[in-house]
Structure formats: C-alpha cells, structure tokens
Length: 297
Image 1 (cartoon, one colour):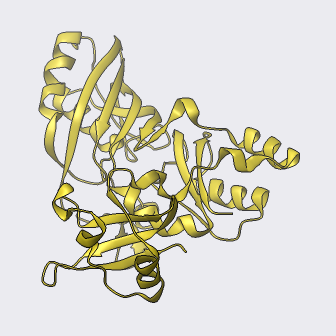
Image 2 (cartoon, helix red, strand yellow):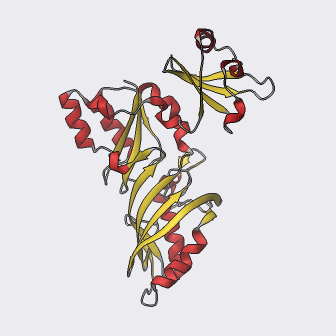
Image 3 (cartoon, one colour):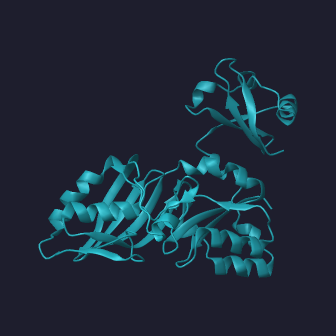
C-alpha cells in the first residue's frame, strides 16, 4: 500500500517508535517519516508507506508550525523539561512587554546553535549519546528562518507561542535563547506541531484511530496519495510516447507536450498521463531536456 498517513504523534513516544507501530498495524514493510519530533513533543508526524517513502525529501523543505509552551526561570541541559536543571533565575521583573521586545530578535533569518541533546551526528555518533556520556562538542551555528512568531498568552512564568519556521529550526534552542535574552533562563515545557506542508493537525489521526481502521479493514481511507506532497511543483501531461520514455529512463522535451518550463521556478516537474501519476522529472539546463528522477509506474 503506497501513500502517506498524517499521524498525530502522542507524547512519550519516539518518531521511530511511531513508524514501527504503524508498520506492525498495517503490515507494510517499507515505511519512514519526515520531520523528527522529540519523544515528549506531540502533533503532526507524516508517515510514508511503500513507494511514498521515495518522496520524503520533497516534504522536508516545507514550513512547519508549532505551538510551544516555554517556562521562564529554569534552564536545563537538554533545553526541555526532560533535562537536568543548570540555571535558575528571577522572573519577577519579566513583563509581557519585555517578552514581546525579546521576541522581535528571533523573527526573520536568525542563527541557531543546535542543542547538544540532538540527533545531529559527530563522527558518526549522535550528539545526544555523546552528551549522555558527558562529552560536549562545539557546534557551528546555522541559519534558520522564523516566518511568524506570535505571543499567544503570557502568565508568568509561562510563555505560549505560535511559531512558523523553516526546516532545521530547533524550538528547544529558541526557548533556551529566549531565556538568555531575558536574563532569567528558560526551557521548553511542551511542544505540538500543528502544520507541516499540506498536513494539518485538525485532519491528523491518532494511533488508536489507525488501529481501529486496521481492525475494520478500512485504514486505507486515511492515506494521502503520493503526489499530495508535490503540489508546489509544476505538472505536465504526456502521451503514450512520453510515458514510454519515462518507463525506459529516456529524456523528454516536455515543451512539445504543451508545458512551458518557465511556469515554475523549481527544477522538478510532476508527470501524468490520463490522470495517472507517473513520476518526477528533473531539468537538465545544458540540454534543456527533462529526465526521470522518480518513476512510479
């Protein structure tokens, strides 16, 4: 079965654990997820099944939206509630206005240092394993983008935010950095991903719902088609000759099929024949032709 499930990940479960559970329920051997969530985080975790695993990369660049609850006054080594307290500060002088002012520095393109407790690797070892062994590695800052950062509520010492951001953004790091900016320390208390590309938490299903669907034999109704995550890529219809070229891995001149390559800025295009999704083509700038990159015939 090929498609994508919009899973609402529960707390206290790893993203890998969710995928393993989905595989057991559905019987699908090939499965993977996009956008890892920390074990304590909840919300959208897209799980790709069968041939859909081949398009995970096309979702990765999509924006993500989170609801985050940050507790001021206490910083931890993991930047969230699961870690050891490393600093405690006074929040009595922190006002809503001060929080709003501090948040302005985190909007737009910012530099972030990934937390030591993360899945990033150093010489093949995940950083969190090194951190648990008491080893600290210098991490380079990297650019991420915060498209939207709104203060939802303020009730000392809790700050609730809605954050729309680019891939690679660590909300735990943002919480820790906000604590530093306010001079009182902070950590991420809770986190829920509410939007990831086309996937919205209002349409997400729980693992219990999936389990019930598997018992009834109608769980497939929850599947999104493979090309649903490719809607930001241009599309072209081809004839029988074009489908044959795709099957055999030969280049196509899709302008002859009525498609203008200037219609989209991306280097990829979706291909269909009579409504059937055939695959993804990649543009060769030198020859002007398009070659099959992913074929789903």
